[in-house]
Every structure is written in structure tokens, then in C-alpha cells.
Length: 434
Image 1 (cartoon, rainbow, N blue to C red):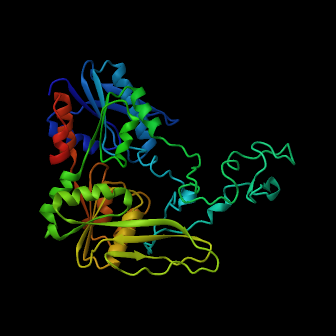
Image 2: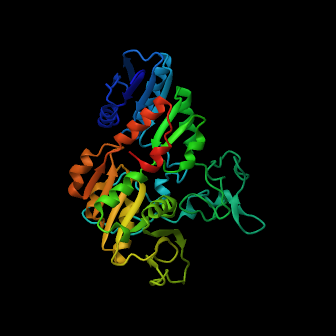
Image 3: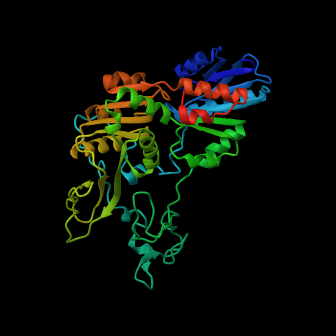
């Protein structure tokens, strides 16, 4: 095609080659290297003057290095007088942080996970110590009761008793003793100050010179609102629909399951397209138990409502996972947009098998599988995982073998690039795929 150049970053060169093969064009040459201090250097081989440039870089691997490399490539092309630069990010980086900020020490999600021989697949790995203890000054002398009896910091910035002793900003955020949940929120809805990176990432891309962006299955579709440039959020639903029809026996009888409430819309959309039934796993996070009261007991299975309850000691926090729907002796299909540590889908699969599910598929768009996720999935109740090559899957295929199947999305991205370059509509890909 005339005046079209496709460049690829270092995150996923195999996908770039496959996209160029589908477009029947030669891949543009880019020389990327690092200096001894870690700085990235980019040199674009060949002229991009007045060309339509598409830069493919997925948000995987060394995410920060790859993102900086993408920004430098965009700026290099704009400096070289490219007519239009489109950033193609099959997996968009930092898109989950506006939803649930990563607080490893609070949520219990490990920053670094180790490989184990056995897993419990309960609702949460080790529950950290009670959260009410980290929100205030450690020294009782720095606090005093107010008229309501609630202990609060004396003064933001300085202690009245000791004017030379500072109270840290963290101590001043919420009163001491105020209950705080796993997401850092109090009962009034106040949220601790945690960096929200959505606007920053969007501004970095547009400031570097990106004129358009293409991605697939954003964790939160509202993330497009951070951009003031066109964003094409491609859907994997057509490909998943074709896979279920072609490879799942009696697919009309299967149950489409959302592993959490956030993915319910995605799962119900696929269930409606296939005419299948739908089930939802709902998690109540950090339910407090009090002294003298027994932990939550079993709820039993009534009218399609079932639950797995965990019995904590009094005064701790726990999580209850409830299955809404009937899955007994049925084939279940878990639908999610991303698998990272695999805690969500492996625990969901255990709950489904406990409730009598016969076979469990896990269909996910982006299979990151970080930490010990591969080992967890291999030992879990999931019978088969289907993901895409939006991120490299060679190592994951070696670890999971026949348990993992990879769908090719290069044709979808290639067709979207062709249509955008020719000024055609991209909406057909949302409904029919390619």
C-alpha cells in the first residue's frame, strides 16, 4: 500500500512481522539500542516524510522501558515530518490503575511471588494485618480524643505538645481508628492519595506526537475518555464467539461465567450473542468479624445462589465468593480481559468445580501470566486456557503445553490498520472480527 509504513518496537517483534505479512508490506527498519546507563536510543531507517506511520508496541515485558521506547519512536517520526503517527498497543499499559490502584501491602497481592508445590485457591492469599493500624501516628502522645470520643491527630504539620516534632502527611489523611477497606477507602468514601496514571499516560502519548491510537479490550472502556485523539478499542468477542462455536461441543448448553462483577458486561454480551446462559461470581471483600461472633457460616445452595465461605479468627478480615447461577454438570466458560497473577480465574475455577461444573474453559484476551501464574494455572481446576498473541506466548506455551491455546489477532490489527489508512470504517471489526 502506498505511503504506509509499519514500525515495530522491541516488546513483540513476532506480532509486528505477522501484521506486515497480512498487509503484504515490508516492515520499516528501526535501530533501537541502549546506552550503558540504560537510556534508549532510536534511529528510524528510511524516510517517513508525509507517510502514514503505525508503530506497534505492546505493554508487556519491561513495561516502562517499552513505553519510553514507544514515546521516542513517535517523537522521532513526528520530527521526521511524518504525516500521521498511530500508536498500536495491543495490550495498553497502566490501564488497570484507575480501577484498583496496586497497593501490595494492603490488598494482599504479592509484589514478587514464588513458585510453590501446592495452592489453596482460596479467595485471598495471606490476609495482612488489620488495616486500622496503619492510618495514624504510632505514638499515642501524638493524638487526643475529640468531642465525639474519636482519636484524631492533634495538628496537621506540628504537634501542640512538641512543636519541633512533625506529623507526617500520611498521619493527617484520616482519623486514627477509622476503618479502611482493601482499596484504601473509608466508610464515607474518602480515598487515600494514590497516583492515578490514566491522564498522565494519555498526555505522554499525545505530547510525544501520537495522532491516533489502536488497542484491544481495554480493562475499562472509559479509559478512552483520557484522550483527546481518536481511540479505536477493538473487541475480541467475535473471535471468541467463533472459537466457542467451532471447538466447544454443544456450546449452546455451556454457561458463560464472569469471574468478578467488573467483567459482567463483557460476559453477558458474549452470552447473548451465543444464546447461552450466564453466571456471575461475586466477591465481598474484607468483611469484618467482631469479638464474640462466629465467622460467617455456610450459606448453602438455594435458587442458584451458592457461596464459598472462609472462617477467619475474630477481629480479622475475610472474603466471601458467591456464585449466582446454576453450573452443575455444565461446561463453564470463564471470560476475562486479562490474566496477570491468575488469582481471580484460578479461584473462580475452584468455586465452579466445587459447585459441580463438568469442564472449565478460561477465555482471556491478554495472557500476561506474571510471577508464578503459569504454575498456579497448571495446578488449578482450569481444564483449558484460551488467550491471544497480543503479548508473547512462547514461554507460556512451553510451561502449560496443551492446556494453553493461542488465538492469532494479527489479522484483526492488520485489517484495522488497512481500513484506517484507506479512510474506511472500522466498526465492522467490532461485530464480525476478521
